[in-house]
Length: 178
Image (cartoon, rainbow, N blue to C red; front, side, top):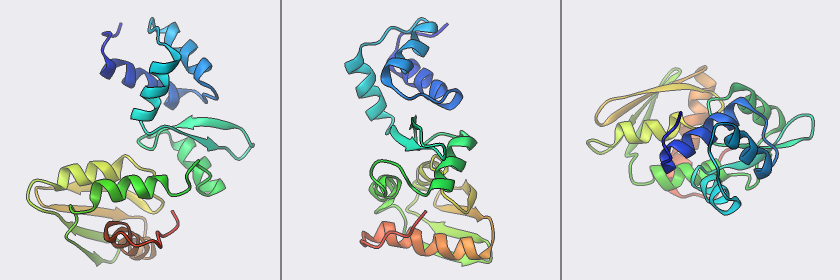
């Protein structure tokens, strides 16, 4: 049973998109109705926008909703296999640039680790934004008060991600490929 709040509805949408390959708002509405959540098309459309949902093209050619914050490994692998075939190719970069610009003050690399500095109190917020995105080569983050440790898959990924991170927070046009 779920409360009838927007937060609960957004969570139900997130879970539905993580568990099912949802191709349409009508299909999503049906999945929500099975849980006792009745929603209008207009509300569902706004909710999907609030979640930054977009459609992802899978390797088999089908399109399905995808939320950048998803932890659905299949969706991430599908995106990596096809390249960033999401409507608005650099949507994740734009999203991160919007959040991280002004929060990241420096990036230093030590082999496969990145040490990212932020103003006091901003590290956890910035790390959370990074963790919610499927970023190729980044395994995860650990945040303190003003420092984020980013663990990359290898030295090459760390080098690439350091350059990419500095590019997106500097507002440069040349965003590195995911």
